[in-house]
Length: 235
Image (cartoon, rainbow, N blue to C red; front, side, top):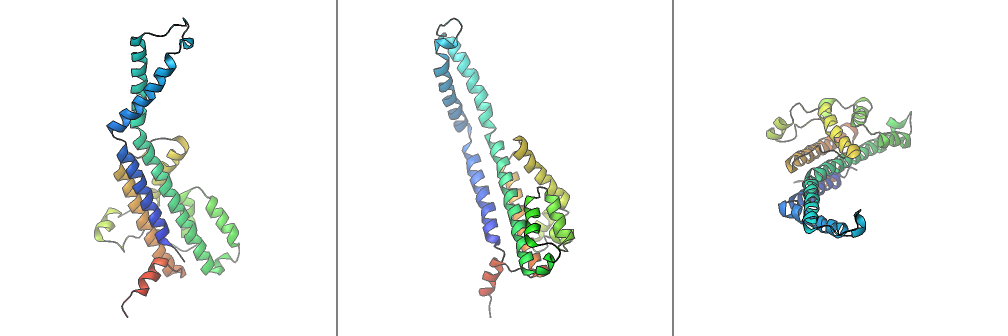
């Protein structure tokens, strides 16, 4: 049985966690961190053993050195937002990857005929260690009889959401994962606002819901959330 709520909750918790951190990085926070670093620099440079002439530097020299260090550190702290946003993207993609793993495992459990020629352990091992989202997608298309239209189907949502994601396909999802990989492997900045991260969260949430429904219809995989709803249906 698929537990969508676990993954949807984790996506939302990640967004809230990142949003709150980003919200703290204001000018006051930046100056506080930069100035605290400046105090540490001051303690180091007043040591006469650091200087060739073994003399304590003048107050003017100390102020200039500290000022340069504070400015450099403040510039670095200002990039905390973009750095944290990027790692929010990494976390969200990891959650979606785990969701796809649970979907596949549920499908194989309910449909043992799919493991007739290759056992479930081997299938899952390959899937879990596959790093490219396009290759994972191909398994759903080639092995589980999904079409691209089904995999990226937003028709169950409001017309506004359907318009927002009209034409979204594997190429667009690959681009999101390319950004994720860039952050993970190079520490680059790829997301510049919390709104961008919110859009990723919303997209992955919609995809989770759609895939859950499709797996139920195509492969008879049960949904924990839909089971709860069914208990409260009118007789």
